[in-house]
Image (cartoon, rainbow, N blue to C red; front, side):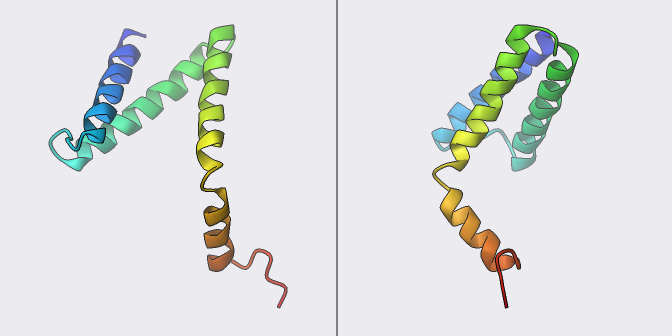
Length: 90
């Protein structure tokens, strides 16, 4: 749990310095840190699923993903329909 907290703090710090135009050395370190956070988050959610705070955390993550898709939903669907045959009745 302490390792997850450390990875989360470093992940947030990396995001903050990324917003200011800086980054850790190399883009792979950012990607590794992101994937590491995602793996640890999945592990924490599975391991502590019976706790109420874990369920709230999971729902907040899903809500954040859903809310981030709302502004870009129309362009995303336009690209999806352009590159696929979904909705094509020819």
